[in-house]
Length: 160
Image (cartoon, rainbow, N blue to C red; front, side, top):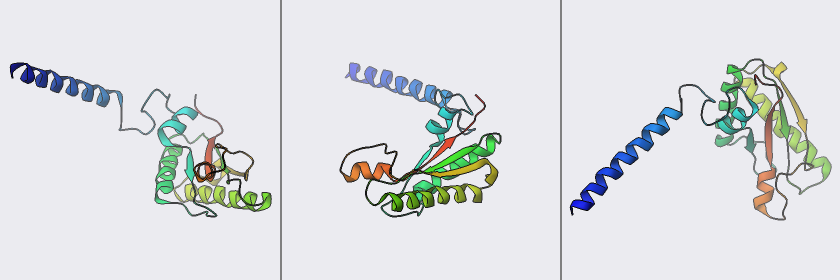
């Protein structure tokens, strides 16, 4: 019984130390300062903010999850006003080349419009449509198609 009580105390102290270390290493007061990424870099944007939003089949509608990512992107872009971005629209492999180019252009424009509505200046953003030409996943299954239905906000220039 004494060993169990001692183990419980040691375990509690260990958990407290891990928790404090985690809090100390994450400055949550400023966006983009978590992890090993240098603030204001492409890696910071990609890892700490999120550079990709997903879409459902044949849709250009932004989900609540996508809007959350885009709100974080807008906040980050406001912190780094010298940064410009290229919004890249993508589609899955199904459908004609022409259809997918048009759909991915609309997806990129939906993202650009949302970021603009959040206060990101239009002259800091460009859009490009890749259709189905640049998949991130290649297989003949919904799991791959879903990953390819996306818009990526690619940072063009950063502070570091």
